[in-house]
Amino acid sequence: MAIKPSIIFLTGYRIYVVAFFVFLAAPLVGAGMFAFNDSMFPSLPWRGFTMDWFFNDTEPKLGMFHDRRLMRGLYYSFVIASCVSMLSVFVGTCNAFLFVRYKFPAKDFLYIVMVVPLVIPGVILGISILLVASTIANGAAATLSLELDFLRPGIVLVVLGQFSFITTITSLVVIARLKKFDVSLEEAAFNLGASRVRVLRTITLPFLFPAMAAAGIVAFLVSFENFNTTLFLVGSEAPLTITMYDRMVKVGSTPVLNAVSFFLMVGSALLALVSVLVQRSKPLT
Amino acid sequence: MQKDIKRLSFLLLFAPFALWITLLIILPHLGMLHISLREKVAPRVYEFGFGNYLNFFNEPIYWNTLLRTGSMSLLVTLLALILGFPIAYYIAKIAGRRARGALFLMCLIPLWVSDLIRAFGWILLMRETGVISNTLQWAGVINAPIEFLYNDATVIMGLVYTTILFMIVPLVSTLDGMDDAMIEAGYNLGGNGPTVLRRIIIPYAMPGIVSGCIVVFMLTAGSYLTPILLGGKNSSWFTEQIYDQFITRYNWEAGAAFGFVLLAFTSLVIWGGLKLTGQTLNTTVARS
Image 1: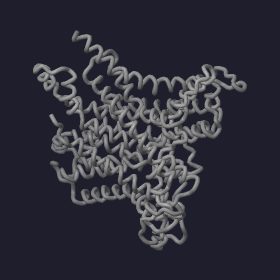
Image 2 (image 1 turned 180 degrees about the vertical axis):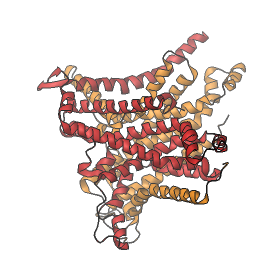
Image 3 (image 1 turned 60 degrees about the horizontal axis):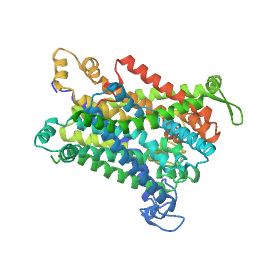
Image 4 (image 1 turned 90 degrees about the vertical axis):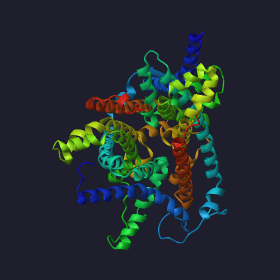
């Protein structure tokens, strides 16, 4: 910078930045720390270090890996997040090609339409999808006596509800990458006699792959942690966030919830790290 | 031949987009609009009418909750901007090359932790038997446990915490694209710190500011977990009313109307913000 700010100002500024990061870390430390406290309650005083809340297999200190309901929640979360991630990356990639490569009427307007799901409150997305799905299912049951179970609250609706706004995120990520693609690479391959499919498979998709992988990871994480949209669409197969919320509100918190929190934090941090590494890596072309 | 292929591939690419938007966004919202516009006159008998909306306006507790949610969300947005801007500026302009990436990543880590866990963490820190109360007692600052939860200040703090990252990320990416020479020029022409900030940096960062504000406002007004868990029974957040109508009272017509009121309200505020700052969705949130 041309003008060095005064030392006092800069020191004050640095202190503020440090304080901010302490603020960011505080609840995460709070949630994670008590997973290792050898006590029945997630609060001080500290009664010594334990791994029981992860691995112990007997009540009352049932560890998370032996808690059937939590493990089932984790499994459903995983299934839902995987489906959402694959679907939204597929549609997001299609959208990227559509908006970067083609000219069509009302393109600018449709681009805004594509972004809108991100600005709709998650609660609204959840209830609107619930309403329409239930109306259709009720109608089919009444007039055709057809039981459309997948339109009742359950995994399918949760996947659809999360997919409806996560696709915007994946689209934006893949679009950003596709815009940087040098079209002359494809033209060169065409001139050398390659077919469309082959060009796509050997040139364009490898270039896009880092963005697709990163978008997939982001989609997975956003799905895993989603609560607002899921709350309305959930059936008997509750994902982990819903299970945890139920337990917090109905049973009260024991350190097993801290153990789950710690587990999820470490998991997301690792996945986020992978997504950063993937995006940084050079494409194969 | 070539043209046909182009056409076919266009249609194939357009189909997923059209299905997604039509079936999952437009159709549900039309359905919700339809349900919100019908009144129950007898069991299983409905009439078209605006009764559900009239109900909303006739019952002060409903629109008071909406106004409260709206004004608190604006306050949260403002706080997130004021607190987040210096951080974004530090990351983009002051921190060294290596520190920059690390700080940015540190900003992102809480982003990937569920709302629920963050709120849970705050509860453990701030409740009557929580860490802060205990520490203050141990230090002798207070004599009896203090309950920090269940008040507006805590709800606002929690909401700023959950949303501030969505302010910082777009700000960093706009400020990052700003040439340092512009700031230097401002100083060379005789501007002091505040003038340079007001006349050069803020106008340049405007798309990022607006983008961050839209996302933060929308997330706050539509949030459910943080106000409920940190605010308890007296948080009276509007999403809670919607949930209540839907799940507790099973009154889908009123719930749908409330949903639309929230949607219209947030859209109106976002539209007003865009008009006021002369930006569009394309230059802000949709920028890629």
